[in-house]
Length: 324
Image (tube, rainbow, N blue to C red):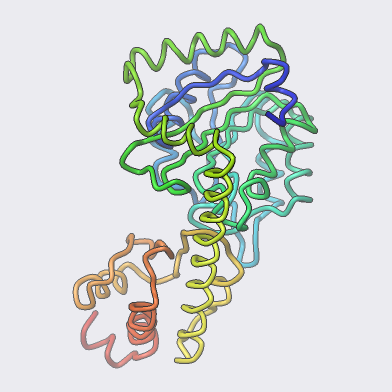
């Protein structure tokens, strides 16, 4: 493997039950250690499960503003890292931030990593969308590689194959923890094994064997890389198509975010009442925050979705009659 930490046997790892399970196990493991602070920092907004996952294992969870109208709020992030106690946990989205769609640039990741090292903070990457952001798995994993190779940071990574390999039903996730020495890695792996044993006993083998086969076979691995590029391109294409449809209709609002942001998830900026109306009368389903999966759009429904969004955001007389 092209990793110094792996070559030097400084990485402990285990299989967990998809993203939720890996974050849960990582939280339990970090609570066991005496060196980690019992405070976890998550972005605002973030995946809705992050807070309850870490609170459920005893962490005090704090939030910091992550997204601005034009990208990552670096000032807020740096302020949170500067104010955090040493060895506080920072849950970072490796790529395709859920739900904002804003990712740090490589230069910003380098600055984040430098301050993490200076402040002795512990990064825990939630890597649910590797390969589905930039058409390139390695590019999406830039921050993980940089933190491990260039900064030699201790960190955890929750790598899910639910989306990238279509393994939702098999719950396949790897939880590698990069440490400073082989001895530490051995101790961490022993703790992970104990936690997995009492939590789920044994993770399912079938999906893990599929993933191992794909990653271990040159031909299958190359095909998978091409498939990732195809899926990523389709997601980008649907973002552009929805933007074009809304723009052509003259729909009120700033829809440039659809093409500026990345990944599967997007928040449309609709009100809860508008979301409810779309669900009740148009059978368009999304979270109350108007968070949608771009992957749910296709050539057959994207115009219909745009027309319905246009109706509820521009026809004020209609809205007054039907939705108030």
